[in-house]
Image 1: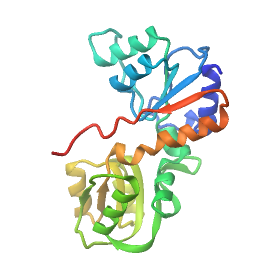
Image 2: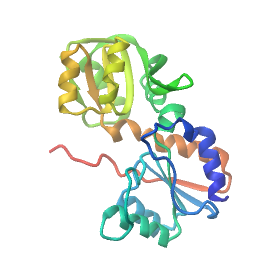
Image 3: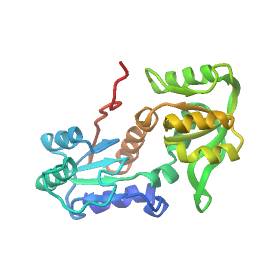
Length: 257
């Protein structure tokens, strides 16, 4: 299949018009006419991921987070990003990102909620046509903040999560925003939820949220969003008979010692 045919499938799943205005999704490196036989899925196009794709002869990398996010003025080997771009081009590897369009239409938050048996009934922040970032729902039964944190750890196979709030706080209504969640605090407060489950909150945002009556569980970007890779692998495998689709999960990019 041509790269443009793969792109058409991905954008049928998550149309790029649903991406946030500040985002940078779509084909970031490569030619649409490239013949694709092997695809590597990853959360981020790190140097490790790019090197693995080159060494193992993949034709295309599909990531959740965009490799090129902000404006760049030059592409050379004096920067990590420039070196990755040059390396992918030299080896004819395409790189495609589906970020907030997947969050919105792919339903990253809905997938997370399904794993946690949360009964969802609306979006957290509406962005376009009734769709949006995150979702709001209720747990099957109330539990303490500590119990919910342990439940999240168990369901997602995590060693730890970061919690803002009192352990014995009772949680029933939950907002889910798997990526960076600090901008979703105001929407969670408007929805009067008990807890915001997110992937990246920050010290000061977490403190402020608790003081406004909202508990937080931060399960890390990787912890919650790693489900992207399995979801897209299944989707592409079901729709591309002769394409090999593999995952490179490089894990949480930091250690807690």
